[in-house]
Image (tube, rainbow over all chains, first blue to last red; front, side, top):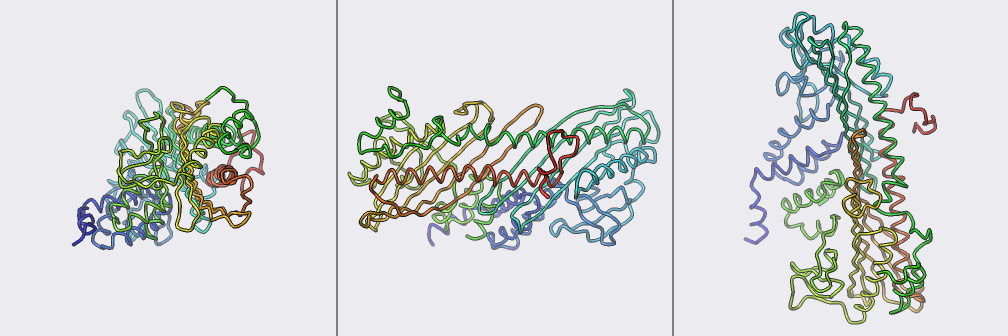
Length: 308
Length: 259
């Protein structure tokens, strides 16, 4: 019929799905359901919508480390790439359960006990659970609403000293206040490589902090950081304590540096974009603008004679 | 359209260009609505006659050509593109010159352009634009920003003069993004966009340019402060709510914590 129809049909179904996925994946913390609603209205096509959400939600959920509660309130599971047993199954090592989830609805549909092969060996589990205990203590002190978990990402079948294994600590604190037009999330992921031969634990931390304020506007913070540290390979309990101390130290330092960045804003960083006032510390002399001679007058009053 | 605008409020501002082109391809029938309601970072062309750059927007565009405020010519050339009347063009030239100085005073660099055209009600419309790249590789004087951009669009509708006064209706949009990057502190990026309106009735004794200039200056200062204190402040508040500063941070006091 018209040009418009031609253009609309020029977008293939796959392209529409990709666009929808892009919007979903770029949703700020806690906002994917709102974005999904808008996308559904835009696509006006259930099949495309379902295809997009079924692909986008799992990725989003894992990257945002979302936390879901077990129906029987026995605990929580964190949806992460480390806890993924299968595309809809996620392990909670603390309660040794596997949750079967619906990514799009973001709920746990069912739960089952974890199988032996899904859990770590008792040697590794000693380290994992000792660390878990310390991390829970830390997180409950440092974060008003934090969740955490410790997973074994490598060497879970190591039965005794002599081989390396790797644990991962995942911490997430999210706050959703849509009524205040504000959402945010703090995510930190700590990789601990227990190196048997060196008798060292190599620690790598990654932070991702985001905040979104959108009352009559749209402003977002996106901050990332990485750090490294190491400590001696000790007994399970001692390692747990020293690793948690390392985490606590780096996280506090990072928060500090975020605050510093914010405090530099008004007079320093922002100035590179726009000053609060001209160097003259007065408002611009608009009233000196007379027809045709204005430029010279202004230059004179600003002491810019001869320049420009 | 509502869904589209909803999405634009959620997408990270630094992706707004990609978001708009995605929406334009999904909703081709709404392209004029989208283009007028969604703010976009500004593009620039170079005027072949004067060698000076000028900013592109819907208000100096005709088909695929843009009119330069320096030479008053369309790039690429057009036979019959609209131009302001001779009198308005005088005011436009003046405005561009003065605004250049204003821009330099506040932005210490960057590019500005002013476009004017008559509207149907015997008044006129003026559009003042500023584009500043504050990154240390561009015009960031102090070298703090790895990446930084400020794009401002001010559109003023000037009502016909009634005796001594004229009515001015200003709609301003500011889009900004700043990123600092540091070995020890990681990447810190704040970006945002806001839009505000201001209406005033002022005496034309000192001329339109003076009135418009003052309104814009006031608006820009308000927006800058608002972005800095309210908007960025809210994101900082959020971070401190997620993880309150601990006692080991020596310089912070309890009242800096938001309950």
